[in-house]
Every structure is written in C-alpha cells, then in structure tokens.
Length: 411
Image 1 (tube, one colour):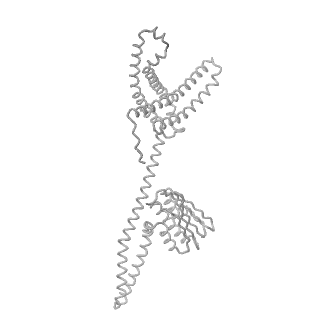
Image 2: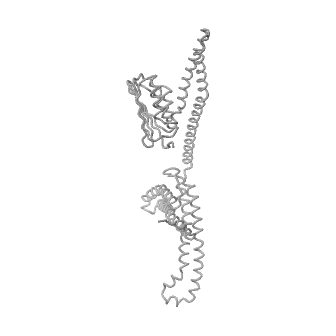
Image 3: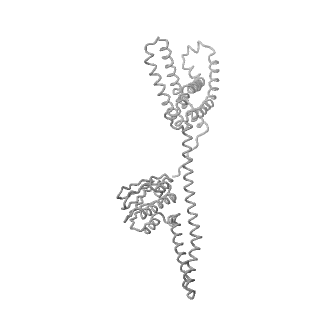
C-alpha cells in the first residue's frame, strides 16, 4: 500500500499556530514578570510600615519578603529559561548563581515593563475577540433590552469594526513583542564570561586535537620518506657491497677489510633506520591494526611477553598510535630499568574506551616524577584526553593502566 504524503499546512493554519504560540508565550511571561514586582512592592510596603512604626507585623514580614525576593530572583531565571526553550526554542545556559545582579535587574526593572506590554497585547486580543463577536453577545441579552435601546445595532457595528481591526493588529503586535523578548531576555540572562570561557576551552580542545592530528600526519610523512628514500638507498648500497665482497676476491687485504667494514656499517644503519621508522609510525599499524603491530613489538622484546588484544572495532588513528607507543615505550622501559623476567600486555575495547594494561614482574619503584620517559607517556596519553595510572611498589609488580577515548572509529 502506497502511503500518500501528508499535506503541508496552509498559510492560514501556520499563522494561527504561530499566533497561539506567541499568545501562550506572553500569557506565561506576564505572571512571571509581575511576581517579582509584586514581591518588591510588598517588601516596600513592609519597609515603609517598619520606618513609620505603624505596623506590628512589618519586622517579621520584611525579612520574609526579602528572602522571597532573593529566592524568586534565581527561581524565575529558571522559569524564563524553560519558557524560552519550550515555546520559542531559544536556549539560555543554566546560570544558577552566576551574574546575580543582571538576573535581579532583569526581574525587577525589565520584567515589570515587559509585563505591561504583555498584558496590553493579551487584553487587546480579548477585546478583539469580544468586539468581533459583539452581535452574538447582544443577541444573548433579553429582547426587552434591545427594544429599550434603539440604535444599538449601529454601536455594535462600530464595535465590531474596531474588533476586526484589533484582530488584525494582534498577530503582528504579539510577534513583535515575542521577538523583543527573544532579544532582551537572553542578552540580560547570559553569563558572558562563562560562555567565553566555554568557547575558549572548546577552541583549545579543537586546536589541540588538530595539533595531535598534524603531528601524527607529520610522523607518517617522515616514516614514509625514510622508508621509500633513505632506507632504499642503504639497502641498495648494502646489496652492492655484498656483491663486491663476494665477487672481488683478488683485492688486497686492506681493500677487502674496507669493503667488509662498509658492508657491516650499512647493515647496522639499515637496522637502526628500521628501528627509527618503527618508532615514528609503523606502517603495519595503519594497514592491519593494533594486534599485528603489537605482536611485532612483543616479539622484539628481550623477555617473554604475553599479549592479549581484544579490539573488535578499530579506533581513531591517533588513538591507535598512542596505544602502540605506550606499549612500545613501556616494554622498552621494562627492558632498561625493571630487570623483569616477563611481562603481560592486555589491550581491550570497552564501549568507547580503549584500555591498555602493561604488567611486569620487575623490581618496581617506577616514579613518573623521576624521569622523562613516564612523563612523556602521560603527556602523550593526555593529548587525546586519556587517563594514565601507574602502580609500582618497591619490589613489584608494576602495573601501568591507560584508558583512551575511542568514540571515532576507523571506517
């Protein structure tokens, strides 16, 4: 069965819907704006009675009125937030006790003026409806009244014309007042310093993420240039030296020794360059993910490493790079300082968190404040809003726990 598209509302229907929303907005705002004015008037009356010493209840009612004014100043701000959001879709950040003078100034000074305008528009709307239907109201009166008031139809016609004119004036007046409040209320009930601070934090977070991505992209570029450029030249040179060593047997011993040393130096340079490339950004990480990349790191460690990777869905490239370098640097530190006989690496993804746990049975006593290695790891983890924890009592074991947010997945 083919569903027919829903008909679009007509212009008249949209106009009525807009008018209902505007009138509801003004009707909800009038009592809110008048409440603080009434409380202020009541407090003023009690203050005058206290100063004139002609009211026995004034000393007790004046503190109550002041407390109610204080509470209402903040409560009405929340009510205005709700009114603007529910009826107009205008959002004002939650202020609570921020910018109190602006809140009280709005409710005490601006609010009563807006209440008068709102009441004027609402009364005009009621009078417009009553004037437009004046003949219906007149025919509800007894026949004797109509007989005793000749010429009432003429006056009713004038009233109906005025009602129709007012009826056409109500929608633009209500819409203009609503637009005025949408401008005034957020402008006064806004914590500019707080919003500026939030915007600053947002900008810094975005710029830091951009810097992390740019640094990761630069490492990838350097790794690619070294792999495709310098490394290939060294491999070619080592190959030529190997061929020369194997074929040129009739050279003097001194020349043979030079070729041997050059061949050995070329192979050592290739190995060092391989380690450097892996340290910058391993290509296997981009191509295959964390499991194969970390398997290579664990295989190169000088002690047994038990590796467990449970990552059903890949994380963002920057997050994977941080996890890889955390494990690589941690195993390097264990090999250099911990005197461990074995280590265990567990990488799991739990929802939006990638958790990396590195454990070793070394001597313990690792302190992030005592060296730059652990501090560097903590800084690299914090660059992607991760959490870094280290437990390393003297005598071991040492447990390093890293949690990285990985909501953005690699497609």
